[in-house]
Length: 439
Ligand SMILES: [Zn+2]
Image (cartoon, rainbow, N blue to C red; front, side, top):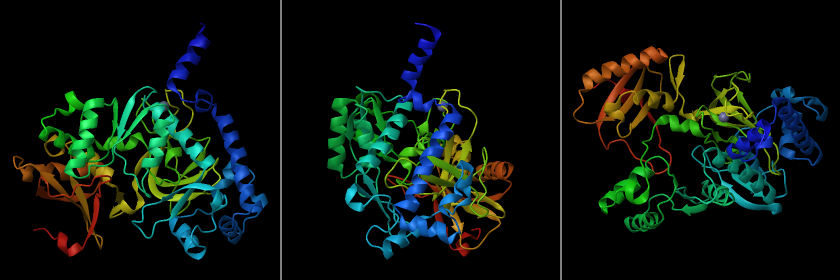
């Protein structure tokens, strides 16, 4: 085998779809352009009333999209607008790219900031999502013939269905175990895991810890008996995928072995990172809102602002994949402002993990966000009784000041005080400013 043949073989091992994942950037951009143009024409010609109305009221015409760079000129859409469209034209709104009777699956996006919106997939939409999922799982080294246990919740607003199909379609034995339920249910799950010893686990937040604790109570050693090792819950794990809304989630990819951002499926979606006030596009390393234009789906969204904060890694990746990498930083609604700075839970989490005395086995904390601006960031954090909190607070304040240039106050609480969440932890709580007066 010549050098070229050897390179091809390695690419085949590394990538699920080597041709598309290593496509030279200029060809990738040309592909994006052709696909964008197709969706753009559907907005005007089908038409898709919601997006057409929106573009028209911004003064745009069908002829105004002349190249990829023009995309930034058009208005973005938020979930609140989709919600309004659904209320006005129940039940599905007038923003769908395909007639609802062609849809085969429904999802409801989390309704934490209002009533949930409905997501519809046609068969083709599912195929597009699964294809992106296969690439993402392959990047993590998950291969056919192995066995994977996952604890995704199954229900209308959960990615469990999507995740499972993305595993099964790759030829992997999927063990959908669900989040920890009653003691009896946990015991049943552990018994199956004991018999199978899955090769891979996909458990989130405190789920792995809860299963491991339950296993120990039954006299099992999680590592030896279940092949379940608790890797800890290091906040940098957040960067291994972009966990945004289900409207775009599978297209946003996963991190490769470089673990330096998640490779987006840029042939299937155009991702922009946008400074929310000015609409300016953010460059390498700059935080901004995640705005996605879905390319290959029947039900697509045009410049959809997921109200999540991300940043680009625009450097070429040593792995050879040409699609850019993205870091998921957190939800826009979790931004906490102190003076002219804005912090996210991941900033606090990464800092806490530099202090093993409070982050072993995991750092449990909540940012207390006051209802009026205070001069310092307030964080409630659990500590073990053996730790001298006065010295620790001094060092935490210093580290935070060095890194972000802001003051902080730390409220130490005993282990077990901060609420535990089975799926995604709530790291920001709103409190009256009066409650944060120094005790
Ligand atoms: Zn890479």
